[in-house]
Length: 457
Image (cartoon, rainbow, N blue to C red; front, side, top):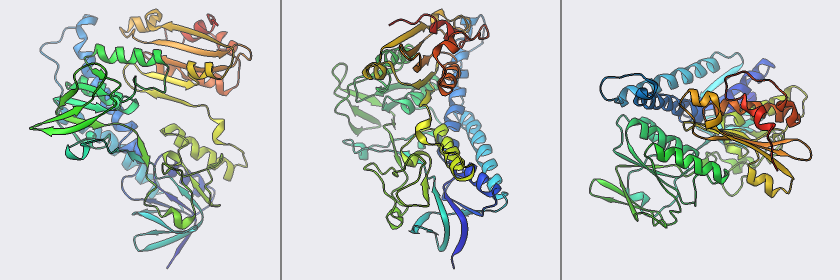
């Protein structure tokens, strides 16, 4: 017999639970379905575990640098990987269990464990149970992509999920993919004690960023002993004895890299291929992402898609904003839409990269008359005092409208300092507003007004 609810939410990533809270508070009955781990990517295989591991790696790195600060440690710094993993697991479990407990205790909310598949545009089957609702929200996230690289099926490999279960430190980790996820793991494991080689098919790391950002990031990684091989156009893999061989055929360097472990970090794919979307008439694009409009409604009225599965953002903060957009339109009589948000994100190597808006390259290609302000972190007092003077800050402004178009802060505190620019852009204020603002000394953010006062064509 069908069970009827006012709303069904499939998945418990960043958007789903928050939406359940709003809908139930509005008096609706809600069914929320989770087939595996509560909390989705962020809690289980993304932000929470990786940033916890990065924190451990940073402590090890700083301990090795202690003498630079006049601090003496006896003996070599070593990493107890089982203890590192235990700490990570505890942080993840606390977050996951807290979320599950909140949902199970939520009034008017019924939690289902199992795999949800559409039966019709208004019905979902979970094992032998069929439930129905006038509104259905898909929040199923994504997973690591495994491309058909030559020989990849003949070697053991790790993804961003399976590498989290390691209790030993790889002797030599080969990271396939020189973008955000790959670089975070590369630096992390180098600091844990692994030899690390990053293999990137493109001509440079994180190609969506400006070339000067890519170059500086490669310099930061190289200074820690990470080998980077770019222009690896013809990758291949094979097992040779107890080793894993990666063929790279780069323009320069040895044609092969020998390692003990391989991490595939070459992109993500949405978890939409086993939902029965065709039975609900929900359209997807060529990559499997659910097609949505500006208010996140799918091609089928009454069905919405939120989070990574809709291809409109690949971050925890964009997923949560998806929830805010849907809730505002449904419950608050507001008219919020996806295009209202300003693209912003961070790369969590150390030092981090905080990014907002257009790159310098994109701004130039737009045909605007732009002005640029920049400053190396060697001229940021706070960075020098902390012994963290790698990187630089760059802001791009429209010379005619005085609008801040974008910024990159690659340096200590860059992931926090960039919010001064995000907030100014969100307020649609001219750059002069921020230029004339007094910031606290000594901080990284205090240099942003200074940079805006030194703009050049």
